[in-house]
Structure formats: structure tokens, C-alpha cells
Amino acid sequence: MRSDKSTSAPFGLKIAAASGLLFLHLPLLLIFLYAFTTEEKSYQFPPPGLTLKWFAVTWERADVWQALWLSVRVASISTMIALVLGTLCAAAVSQTRFFGRETISLLVILPIALPGIITGIALRSAFSLADIPFSFWTIVLGHATFCIVVVYNNAVARFRRVSGSLMEASMDLGANGFQTFRYIILPNIGTALLAGGMLAFALSFDEVIVTTFTGGQQSTLPIWMLQELIRPRQRPVTNVVAMVVVIVTFLPILGAYYLTRDGDQIAGSGK
Image (cartoon, rainbow, N blue to C red):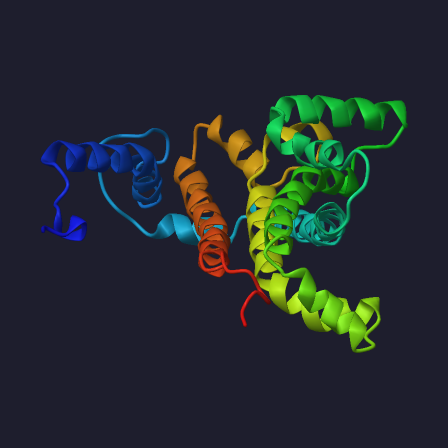
């Protein structure tokens, strides 16, 4: 009997898959291409020439470094907040039973399910009512709302794969709650937390909508890019910065994929 693995996909299906990949990634290839163009005012295809000068121009732009540093700081602190709160929420929902548990779980993931503009308007209204000036910390709080969801989803899935017998055995051997978390729980959920943190950092780094409503006069790197697109000169600088954003966000996502792809086994379920 013919093996299913040796069956070749139909030619039409291959064409459809290739077309889908081209549709998804062609814009990214154009970003990389126009980072090297010699035309600085408009987009011409094909580019009239290729040059590396825009990388030097971008390197010397102080506003680029300010926006990049702001984005890195916001993403880092938002991720740390998300790791703490997301892990605690996941532990409470997955390891205990109480009235309204499913409702709380729904409320935790709601911010990422809502349109970003709704979250942004809600946060801006709350900050205005509380007379909180828009600053670095309002951006961090805004980003943390959806970063928590990313960490929570990764952590709760891994918590449910950890056998309760491991924690029971730890307690029976005299370990307290902190020791059980450090030596039993954390090693089993560590890769999920790292993956969730990577995804949260990537999402925060390129967030636009929530930042627009909570950032005031400050410009993170994505906001800076939007502002630069309306200027008539040095447009390739924006494409150079876009290349950096693609790389910075791609690497954490790739790392998260490799960290979580083998996480379907239940720890402690062996003999």
C-alpha cells in the first residue's frame, strides 16, 4: 500500500500555497529593497540605483535612537510586568478551583480580543479621569494590558500539562511553597514563560494604536515611522528602521516557536 508521506501534493495546491506565501512576504521584501534605493523622495520600481548610504544616515539620526531606546524600555518593563502578573493569574486559574474561575479567565484574555482602538480609548479616558499625565509609564501600563494575556496563555497551557503529583510529592518531602515553585514548577514552565516573554516583547515593541492614545507627545519607534512617512525626503531611512523592527520582532517570535513546539508532553506523567 502506498504511504501517505510519499503522496505528492497536487500542483494546484502548491501554486495556491506559493501564492499565499508571496502575498504575505512580498511587502517585507519591498521594505528591504527600498532601504537600499538611491531615490529619496518617492518609491520607484525598479529602484533607479542601490546604495548603502541610508544606513549611515540612519545611524547618525538622534531621533531614531531616542525612539528606539523608548521602545526598548517600554517593551522590557511591560514584559516584566506581564511575566509576574500573567504567571500569577495562570497559576490561580489552572491550579485552583473557585466560583467564577472561567469568568476571570475570560476577563484576563479580553484585552487582546478587543480592538486596539477600544483599549486605547478606554485607557485614555481612565488616565484623563484620574488626572494622570501621559508619560512613559502610561505607555507601559497600556502595553502591559495585552502583554499579560500573551504570558498568561503560554503559562496556563503549560501549567495544565504539569502533573499535580509532582507538587504533591514535593510537599510530602517537606518543601514549602516557594521551594516547590523554584525547584518543581519553574523548571517545568520556564520555557513557556520565556516564550511568552519573547512574544510579549515583540508585540509591545511594534504596538501603534494603544501607544497613540497613551503616549502623549512621546514617540516610540513605530510612531516615529508613521510620522516619517509623511515627510517628502529621506524616505529610505524609514525602510532601514523598518528592517530593524522586522529583525527585532522576528527573532523573539522564532525563539518562542522553538521553545514551545515540544511542550505537549505532561511533566510527571511517566512511570
